[in-house]
Image (cartoon, rainbow, N blue to C red; front, side):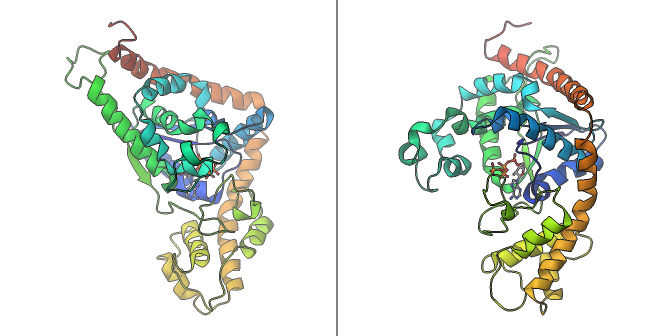
Length: 360
Ligand code: AQP
C-alpha cells in the first residue's frame, strides 16, 4: 500500500502556486486513490516558526489553512489532516536524524540560501548579510522535513518543484540511516525490529512551478511582500481580475508560448491551462487560439478561467471558517491522536535500533 505524506506551512490561505503545485494533487490522491492507501496531510506549524511569527497571527493562520484544505476538497474522514505540533514525535525523530545529517549538504540547500539572503553560489555561513541573526532552525529545516516524511514511513510525497531538493536530501539521509541501523532480514517474529525507512518518491504535479504575477522569473510565494504577485484561492472575481490585469507581461505583439523569452505570458497560459485541462490540449494550444488577440483579452480569459475554478472553493472556505472553534478543535484533536498512534511504533523501533530503548 502507498503511504502518502505532504505538508503545507500555516501561512494563511494558500495561493495558486500551492494549489496547482501540490494541494490539488492531494485531493486527487484522496479521491482517486486506492482503498488501502494511507494519507497524511500536515499543517507544518513547526516549520513556520523557523522565521519570526506573532503567536496570535500564527494561531489564526493555522485555522485559515485548515479551512482552506477542507475547502479544496480534503475530507477528514478520508485523509488525516493534522497539525504537525500535535505529534511530538516529529521533533523527536528530527533530533535522531540531526545526529546523522551533514552540515555541508544542508548548507547547499537553495531554500536556505534564499532565506538567508545570499547568492546561490555563496556560502551563507560565511557571507550572509545578517550572519549573527541566522537561526539554527532555519538551517535544519530539511531535517525536520525528513522526519515528517520518515516518521510515517511514507512512500510518496506530492510537492512543488521547490521542495524536490529537500526530498532528495530526505532520501539520502534515510539511505545512510538505514545503512547504519536497519535490519531488513530480522526474524519476522521480531516485531520491534527496525527494518529500515521506506525511501520516499517525490510526486511532482505537471504545474510544478507557478510564477509570480509581478516577477515571472520568481516562483509565486507567500512571503513576497507584493500581494499582487499572487492569487489566493479565496480571492474574489474582482480581486482576481485586478491582479491578472496588473500582471507583468511584455510588449511583443501577439500571444505566443515561450517560458524563456516570454515568461509572463507563458505563466498566464500555464495558469489558464491548468485551471481546466479538459478544455485545451496544452498551454501552446491556448497560445495558438489566442495568437491574434490583445494581451488585455488574454488576461480577461485567464481571469475568467481562474475565477470560475476558484468560486466554489471560496464559497466552501467561507462555510468552513464560520464553523465553531470547538467543532474544528475536536476534529483536529482526533486526527492528531490517530497520527500519534500511527507513528509510535515506528519511532520506538528506531530508538531501539539506536540503543536508546531496551529490546522487547
Ligand atoms: N510557486 C509555486 N509553484 C508550485 N508549487 C509551489 N509550492 C509553493 N509555491 C509554489 C508548493 O506548495 C506546497 C506547500 O508550500 P509551503 O507553504 O509549505 O512551502 P513554501 O514553498 O515555503 O511556500 P511559499 O509560498 O513559497 O512560501 P515561502 O514564501 O515561505 O517560501 C509545497 O509542496 C510547495 O512545493
